[in-house]
Image (cartoon, rainbow, N blue to C red; front, top):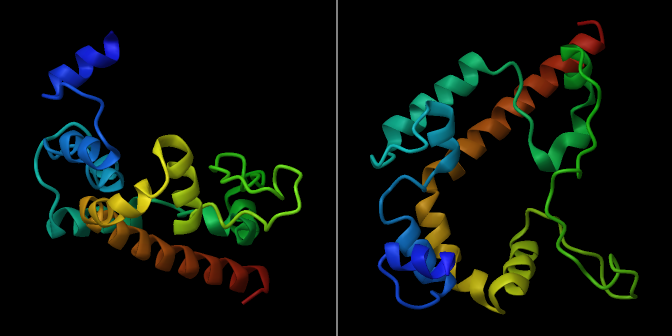
Length: 172
């Protein structure tokens, strides 16, 4: 009953497809570009995220973050952990594992990298049906266009810090 009430509150009288859910959920503009919203304290603000917000988030990362860590590159970040006096973290502890027959003990191919489109297709397909991710990928990209650009910038910052850290470790 709670699900039906929530759907009704959103203007739906049926169980929506993933695409329909995303369109309704993001209609109010406070669920898109979540990383930028989080960094700038705009998580519940209905304003539309723009390039101005992207630049402010980049500045916040550059100015206020001692290090930026990328999930898919945690294994490379040992010197960053050491420089900050932190214990090395296990990289996959907090990641979605897209299953494969090999990861489940079978003879099939290994699971794709967890952040790949193939892994997301498998994960979403298991949750809501085959083909669902492909159907909404373009919409997700549109809803998170500035987050994708922020991620690219964060990857550049990560590389810069990593190179600086490695130079320090070598004594330069």
